[in-house]
Length: 185
Image (tube, rainbow, N blue to C red; front, side, top):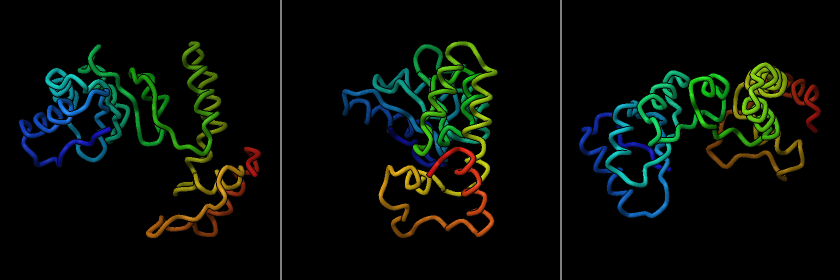
């Protein structure tokens, strides 16, 4: 997975960057659009010129629209995934995304959403989304280590320094409520 060079780097240099990586490896390359946006047309050009560039993880705002643009230009050459930890999965699926890379604290909910979506049941996918994923998203902050800790998956919820700011008292109460409602630890 490779992020593009900075926004102010000329287009020819961006294409040369991905060609050089592609020429150096024998595995498929994911272009991770996070921060620097290539846009769908340039993503397509890069894939046409770089044999190993075959996937994109699109995370720039507005995510669903950027995914759609990448899908439209990528066609059958670039398989497009959403990003941003799966925050916009349903909106991205509607626009042709082939998946996401979700946060790790509640994976079964993402699997259920995916399974319902693949079976054509968008209503059930949305219900799981709203019941299982939205409450965690609404707490805000990086709560996933705490959830993994409460599930007994990791031994400590501590972050290495410099870590994210801890939740304030209200945020902590909201996380406790969500975890209780979802049966987490």
